[in-house]
Image 1 (cartoon, rainbow, N blue to C red):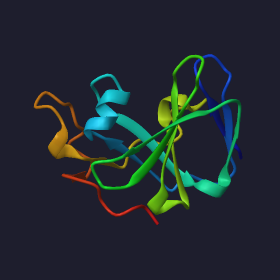
Image 2: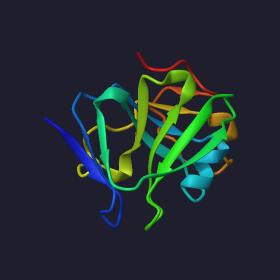
Image 3: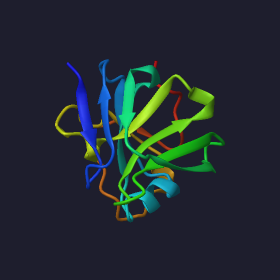
Image 4: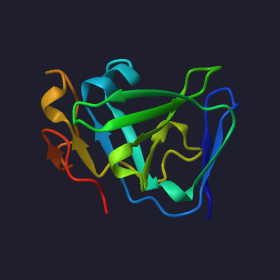
Length: 137
C-alpha cells in the first residue's frame, strides 16, 4: 500500500507506509509564496510513516500560526515536497502535487481563508477556517 511520490527531476523520492490522516488547502501568506500566488494542497500523514530518499534541502521559518516550520524542497529542481511543525512532530505534510497519484485524496478543508486574496477560488463544499485549526488526530 505504499503511497509514493517525488520532485519534478526525480532526485527526491518518498514512500508513505500508512494511510493519510487528512488533506487541506492552505491560503496562508507563506503558502501563497510557495504556490506562486495560489494555495498549497497538503496531505497530512504520520511522520513515522514517511521515508525520503535524496538530498532534501530545508528552510526554517516561524509561520503565521506561531509554529516553527521546516519546509523541504529539492535543491536541484526546487520542487517543494514536505513541511513539518516542531509543535506537531508526529505529523508530516506532503505536497499533493508531488504524489505519483495526486487523486489519492482531495482537500477536506480550506485553512487560512482570511489571508486569501479577494479573487481566490475556494470549494464552497469544504469547511473553511479563517486561521490555523487544531491539527488532525
